[in-house]
Image 1 (tube, rainbow, N blue to C red):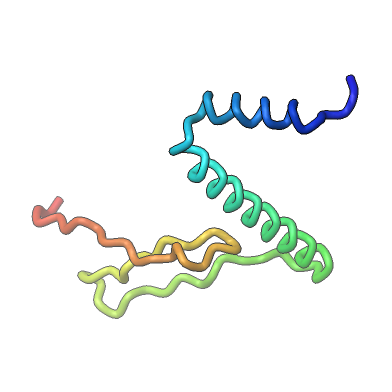
Image 2: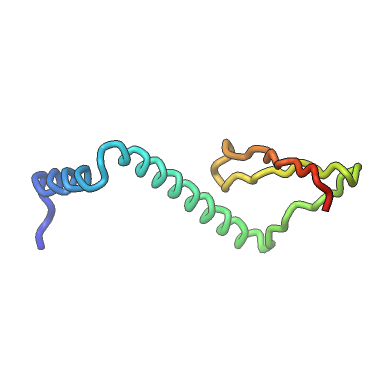
Length: 97
């Protein structure tokens, strides 16, 4: 098995486009890049944890002031992806159980 030449690379790219379609390739590349960023940030966080010698803890939970009205929950973003953190709109249950 020798090295891949330009014709082999072009042939491989054509087969990939035929298999997955031109519309799905940008989405696949975007998700691959996002996964790579998450993996890189996780690896960096693990290295910094090893150097500091401490184990990260969960943030302290606070109780809401009004027990009838729970505090709004938030979906936490993945490390390295700060744009996807958003509040969660939970459905209101009008019946008491």
